Image 1 (cartoon, rainbow, N blue to C red):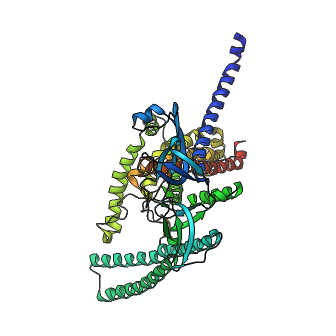
Image 2: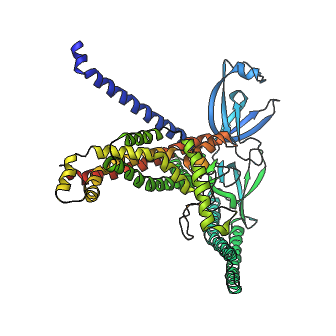
Length: 551
């Protein structure tokens, strides 16, 4: 036994076991997040319950089972619930999503199994997904076309789907017209206003310029009025159709199709149809904008903002980190000052991220951004342009936060390059700058990419500093659009990490938000993994490309 311990084999087994346990724990956590998040989009069976209230009166309840649990009978009795018969030690209760927010006070409610008289899953029940007020559950009765009730058919599902698709297409055209064409006109009108204001401040607002601005403004106003008429016409066409549904109260409700996104007869679907619906819902979650206070809809602006900010941060931090590492390793004299600088760089990695956020707000936003506004955008004051939180300041703040990682990783890569390589290059007549550019930096590029990978992994998950320097709950516009200069670095943006915080802790509908927290968390992990895999593939390519320089 002593020989076995002295051989080092136990330590190898212990290390391997620890790595295996860590991998299993990480994969298990990811699978749990994925299961809890992605299962939210699976079409759940819609049930109809016949219930008894506290007074023994029957009523109907329609909805989806969202969760279930076993509750001790004593706890329910202590809360004031009375049972007519002995239910046993535990009572099963169900969390039911009822929807129909206009007519039902609670979007989610708990029901006890002891209050259930019967439960069915009628094939005629439909789930109507809406852009406002959440889902609606009921029996489609008829379709109204331009206010006229269409003749009754055996199955109105196909007719309803055709009219819904028509309304969705019209709404998409209206939204595109509003965001792109009308948005461009408003953007040009604001630019004209700022141009006139600038000429006023400079004392150069001549009558000729005033007349030219008035002419251009009049043309844009006429264009705006034409686009506005088109927008109202599209919205009016989308709202001319409606559907009549019978809800769980037994009353007929008319829903305008301009707010309806889809209608699914979930109880009629087989497995493959449900799988197709699940894929469509996941696709919408990834590609659409959020709605209903972020508790419904998609997270595309948050995905775009996260990736855009991380890429911008990588572009900023990489050259600064590499230059600093090259100076410290190749040019700076080895002495106490250099050691102090290295210690300071290492200590910067341990500073809490919120401190960087406060620094970014005070230095970048108020000082640098405010100075830029005074020098370049005085006509927009007192409304700030760069003097308010934005994506550029978020990227710079995270660049400073991750700068020590890139410096240390790059310097480690430079230290692994043999000094004989440098001396051989210099002996052949190359200058020190040529040696660095053609020999040293290519050989150290895998280490540079390693530092960048670590920087991206940390920056993509940071939330605290971003809350101070640029991230918002809902961003009206993306940092990139069709208006010149096309990339607007001063704009605020959405972030997946902040979206998780907002949905999980600031949502007015906790039960509806909980699955979205898991789904968004899994999406954030997926984005970080995708960014890291891209950087790793680049690093491996560089390692193979410059491997010959090491020999």
